Image (cartoon, rainbow, N blue to C red; front, side):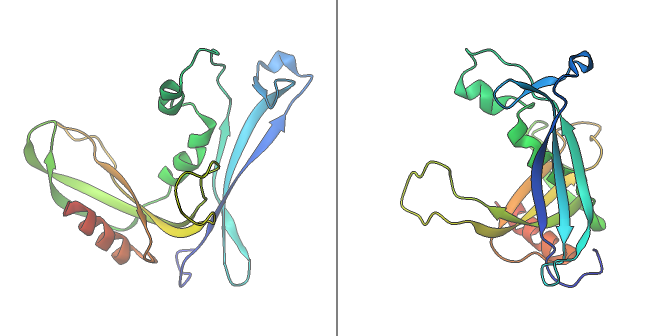
Length: 187
């Protein structure tokens, strides 16, 4: 995959693994509550021209958490156990590409500058339109490129840095990913 020239799409799909009747496994409820099992989120990489499969990039087994009916919208959005966060967890598992870089950053928690050792990864993504249309836009998906920049280890002092950038210009290699990270750092 790394040797492939051009963008490599990553297809995300979640499959329901229903173990109905196996109540002794203590699995979470699925669907309308009549099933029990896991959600299996798979990330598959392919060659866009030949449709050849490069391989399974990520696989996450997830059990839904039972929540009360009184959980508000804000609590739902902030809950880290939401099934809708599986794709972002898969993206966070991308390996770093290219060499690490040292970058001087302003750490707001420390209120001072510090040097961060950063790594970067990138992938093609498809942004789907909102389910409920609000505003004036075409209801079609947008091809974009995700760039993740992060510190692998927690700094001795301060906050661990992580950026997830969404770009509309192609990001096909580590140099382009670092370019987007440098642009973002100018803010």
